Picture (spheres, rainbow, N blue to C red):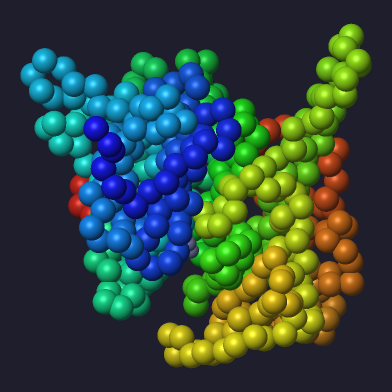
Length: 430
Ligand SMILES: [Zn+2]
Ligand SMILES: [Zn+2]
């Protein structure tokens, strides 16, 4: 029997991960990533799409149902997370869900409610992870912050609870004894030998929104960056800053990511060179550079190169070197579209105010003789990270060696254990 019609298409992007693209009603084409963890019975899901099929007549448009029932060719013809039924008709999926929210915009949380509930028929557990950078952004006025209320007609804002708040450089752990799989911080003095690292690290990347969250899959060497950046591609999609965006924070986040990616690339290069020295074969082994998975349009590009290209473009916009192609009024203020040329790889859409804020800050810094947050006379290759904005892992200049020698910054707090709160929203975690 032929599988049902659906609004999703799936392809494998690496040994454990699939890219699911939704053909949605808003022209967002969300990129959803699903990683079948190689050692633990977990499906890591990066975002949940719009939950709004472009073609209303398709039979299968709910992401969860799709994951649990739709046969995927590149998964040996099996669904990504099939339901295993017991004799009494009840069942659970092969894998528990860890849903990572790249941020709370409507095109990323559209189907999240389906992962917030267990039913008598399907008892699979779900964990929902979001950035701890600014919890209020998710907990207060979600209809505005998700942009649900600005759609025409307005979208009903999904109701869900965050079970785990991801700290910057927080990691995912499995706890086989308690069956709880997500950990934010690591205790300073506590036996954690029974916890298994799942090889996932979270990185706060405020800028597009305060809750923007990137995550790093160290086994596959992929970095997932949400809406921070992506290419225009054939759908001609600009990198968007909503009214809640902040370009100064964005600059800092991108420098933060750049340091991380350069350090990891350098470490891998060194490991590869070491293996090369020890090996007897006569062919050259190439170091696995980090690839990037964006939440729209782009998957599999070189992460370092793309972060640098994005930074260069935004710097050029602030410097007034990129023309405004069109302008419109949105949410009561002028919003501009910047694009270098018709064939340019990226374009940027956002409130004029955000760019002016950066220019004002640069002028203030000059007047007060403070260091400028981003030195526009320097090249991106030589970016200095403003020390006061950084955590202990990212201080001083971008130097690969520095972070290689630094201890890994891992945190854990027992207070983040399995918070499952009633009501539509989790309580303030701070
Ligand atoms: Zn977004
Ligand atoms: Zn988006």
